Image (tube, rainbow, N blue to C red; front, top):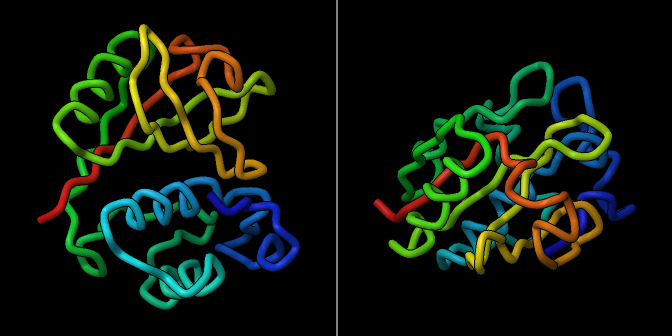
Length: 154
């Protein structure tokens, strides 16, 4: 997974912020769409496409009406902890791409891509530095979960 902090694109604006500060959802989304078979020439081009189609708010938040650009259905859920774990695990088992929203130790919200559920934990790809690892190691486990999005082909 490319890092949202890469000098090649971290200063790209999304609303009144930048990819480096607030691009975790866009990068997680690009990663999930790529795993579903779509391809993009670069993270910068992907962000530009989202911008040109009005998919960022002025605050830099992503609008979720992604089906206007991509052949996907998005189901967004505001669940926390074990309820979020159970739903994300179900989505992965059903073959969906699953994005997880976590509360970081600094108290901010951050998005990751879940790749596999494993004994009360997830293997994840993290756009913060392009890291991969266990949710428990990177963000403290399922108690950090604050929401999720499931993407499936239309």
